[in-house]
Amino acid sequence: MKSTNEMLVIDASYTYEMIVERGIEQSVLCRDLNGFFTHVWNVHPFATLLTSPQWTEKYGKPIIHKMNDKHTFIEGKVGRFNWLSNFFALNFFISQFLLFFKLLRLIKKNNIKVIRVGDPSYLGLFGLSLSFFTRVPLVIRINGNNERVRNDTGKPLYPKLFRSIKLESAIEKFVLPFADLVVSPNQDNLEYSLEYGAKPDRVKIFGYGNLLAPVHLEDPFTRSCDQELFDRLGVLPNKFLLIVGRLQPIKFPDDAIRVLTKLHSENIKYKLVYVGEGEMLEELKALAISEGISNSVIFLGNQNQNTLAQLYTYAAVVVSPLTGRALSEAGLCGGAVVAYNLDWQGDIILNDKTGCLVPFREWENMANGAKRLIENVSFSNEMRTNLRKHAFSMLNPAELNKNEIESYRKLIIKQ
Image 1 (spheres, one colour):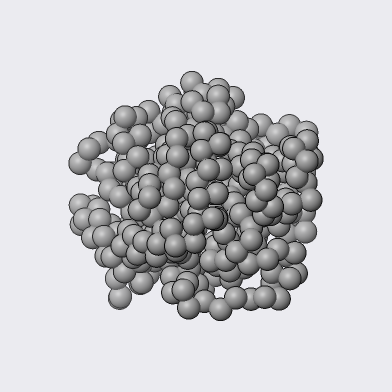
Image 2: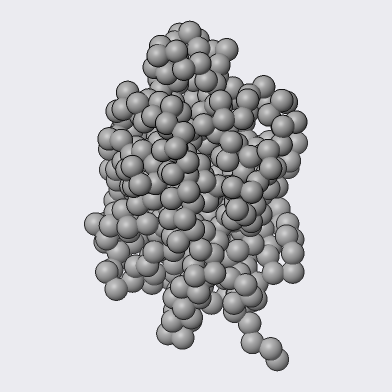
């Protein structure tokens, strides 16, 4: 009988609906590492908290999607029963309890060698419990400096699950020491995990490169301009600022409007394009109106990867208050970037070498950086070229796959 290596990934970054709509299947399909894992079971434990009513019923049993022969996507429900819809906490607990035992059976039935979770708090507890009962190694992926984000926003990262920062932090400090491996995309996030108890000999850096859509890896300097796209969007190539990411307080998207306001005051009448969705949408629209620039701000919602590649490449400036995957994409697409020196952004944006890096929340300096990139074309072109080269050296998918396989192989051998 042919031996198999299977992995269970529990991640709440995107529902399957989001993945299909945005064309980011590669972020999931890359998890088998070119066949190292013969099958990957991908799980969003409470997907219907975020999915649209047209996608699936909010309550009920988990839904299973077959992505291909190597990948299955399981979408858990936010509650088990419609008749308990007014009792969210109880309904949620029942749904998660039943999903937990479903995954226990899945692990035991299949040759699952690794359990990986996408954060050290709720998913960390979930994964740690599964690991405890099955003795399968637990890998925790850290996608941000949670402590710094909480300090900046004054809120827990998952307020619907944890009502206080103190509780969320305590859970992370409890979970991380038990992980067999903690991985993060950069040194800043890795240091946060160490401060919260991850064991120094069990941490690794796994970059974003193999998660990204192939279109971002193509040479941006030979990418033809899709003029029909820009006509449809109502913007001129190289005459707009771009910000990509969730419209949430932890991402500081409002600073981009302040940047544009300052540019307009200096007679640089560019537009600002937002790509992404989130709770701050109406607040951002109101801010644009109050600043008198609403006619120059465009909210596109979520977009597919081909559209994003065009926007990154043909934006005059990519504004990055705080982004992860989006900054990787912008770098590979040769964007002209101005970013805050926060989280991992200083690793990829080296001031005056690969872009403009400014102190955190100093949006006037961010506007000055944007102005410099707009007015000094030779400087902008130099930053674009340097950033593309630097990003590719950091995010080369082949090298990242090689490093990940070696780490997973060591875990599996120890079993």
